[in-house]
Image 1 (cartoon, rainbow, N blue to C red):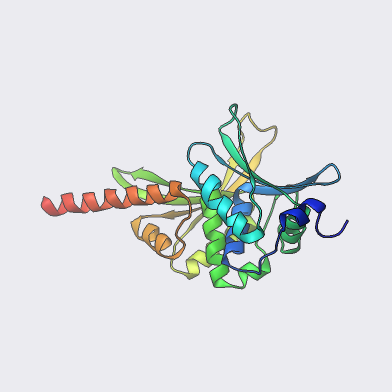
Image 2 (cartoon, helix red, strand yellow; image 1 turned 30 degrees about the vertical axis):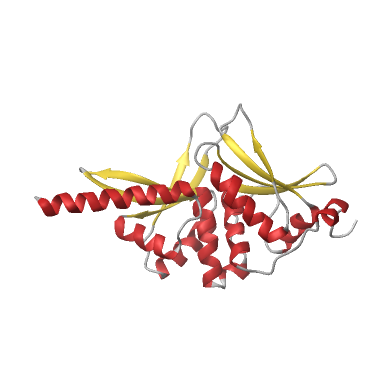
Length: 239
């Protein structure tokens, strides 16, 4: 068979030019997605999320993004026995297109970022947004009684995070890079992961001015952190 399966032709699958939407989709895939071939003709691209916090992001935002890019409506999967939800694309054409554009099939391992994204600052901005919205989070830390926000992104690929760190630091966002070793019983062997952290209100505001977010989970946490900062500043002013 050619580049398109019969089903692809029926659905009128299309390919986008390299653009910010495709760059963001690559970031999403790099964070919580994978693609592989099962049996002979099942070309599967799948993206996972949390059932409670990512439902709107996958079911609305990401579904619309995929429709805009490929003219496909992905299948939404929610299982009662899991906390995860999934979007699944079954398409030979889209699978091979993503492969040609630099996304690897199977285990992502030490995945990097395709050159066509790295060489374009605007594409990198949207790639990092997609990565943050899937493999990143905002939390509030407490150091000696002082609370401050932290953006963190983790991956098994130090190559990936070093590229992201370089991009962010060139734009004035300071990052802390760390290596983590997980010896928990859920793994049969030692698992090494890497993480970048961006700490403090100033970095948080620079991030949301530059990178922003498409995931309500992160937008709500950002607004909550800013509300806390404004309240704290108001209390200090009134003392």
